[in-house]
Amino acid sequence: MSVNIPDSFAEKLVSMMRADEDTIHFYWSPRENVMIQLTSTLFPEGVDDPLYYIRESGMVDEQSLPLFDVFCAKIQSGILSGISSNSAATDVSIKIPGSRDFVMCHLFALFMRDDNNKITDIHFNLRPYSLKEQFDRDVLTYFTSDKNPKLFTKRCQNTIKANPDKNIAFIQFDVERFKLINETLGVEVGDELLQFFSDSLALVCSEEQPYCRLTADVFMIVTTFDTRDDLVAFIRKIESMLCGYNGMDYRLVFGVSVV
Image (cartoon, rainbow, N blue to C red):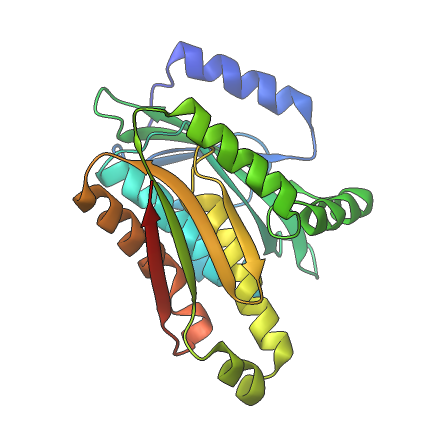
């Protein structure tokens, strides 16, 4: 089956494919149920849903599965209900066919949307990190959002200044009895859970919704909203995507302050 790629979208694909020959590119039209491999062969014949195949084939490292599921949920929501952004990205550990080891990769999705902002077509690129890029990524992660309160405070100030006539909510949440998780499952598991929260918030929150890990297991998100129902829906979305990490039983507790 063939699929027509819009000219404007095709130009972006060609530009991105030329930028890095090591990147794996594939194109998915969920409405037409068609997937096209644009570069190397990552999928066998007959695959029409690349995200489902990647997950079910064992390609994704178990530790990366929860975050990969959040990434897939965001795209699925955009297909069914619409999405305000043009793209989504995450880092995931993947065993590329022909490789014996899992490799940390950057997975980027560029969307084509209809008049109702529903995703119609997606260009994916999957790029393995080099050792230097992996090091730079770790350094950047350490010094940004959840480790630099000054940066978060500045972003909050910018959000308030840019939206003088809108409602703004400060949403704070933590894990109920988080200390018990550390005591029973180990500090390392607790740290993995908190990192999952940080990585997931990068997908759930837009550029206009700054977030930060304040202390220990306490996180904060700042967002504008129109109605109370919109705010409640956003909080429920956060809760649904952040609960259930690796089958763990925990509950998030939220507090909201509106200005």
